[in-house]
Image 1 (cartoon, helix red, strand yellow):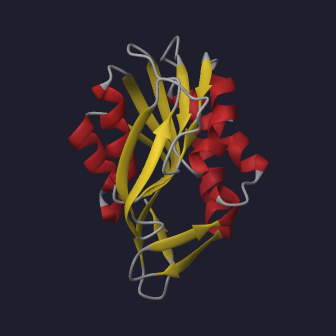
Image 2 (image 1 turned 180 degrees about the horizontal axis):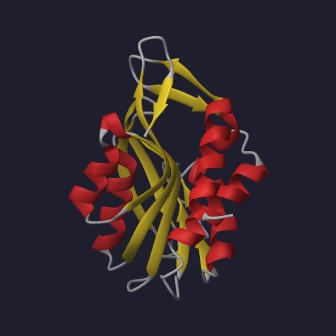
Length: 200
C-alpha cells in the first residue's frame, strides 16, 4: 500500500468517527483517533509518518506532546528506530525523578485555559527530536514546545500530527514562527454551517 493509499484509508476512517461538537468554535471530536485510540488507526498513521520521515536518520527521540501525543509516540518511535521516547506531562510540576526538564506554557484551545504548563524530561542539547501530537488547531502548544526545546539546543526535525484544522491556520503559524514543518495526515478545510466536515 502506498503512502497516498494509507492516507486515503485514514481519511475514510476519520470521517466515519468524527463529529462536530461545536461548529462555531471548530471543535471536532474523533474518538478513535485521539481519545479511545483505535490500534489499527495508530498503526496506519505510524506507517504514514514513517514514510514521511524515512530520510531522517539517527533520530534521538520522539516526544508525544501531552496528552494524546504521548499515546501516539511509542509505535512511531519503533517504526523510525528512534533511540528513545522522552516523557512528557501536562502538570504544574514535573515528577521528582525527572532530570534535564524543559518546561513551557501556553493557552489551550481544547481545554479553554489561558495557561497550561507542560514538561518534557531527559532533554539534552544537540538531540535530534521529532514531536507528535493528535491535532494542530491554532498552534499554541506546538509553538511553545518547539521554542522551549530549541532554546536549550534541541534540533526539532518536525512535528507529526494526525489532523489539523487549516482554517484556524495553526499549521502555517507553527511553520512561520518556528521554521519546523508540520506533517499532518488529514487537513480539515472547513466545517459547514450544518456541521459537515470538508477535508482538503
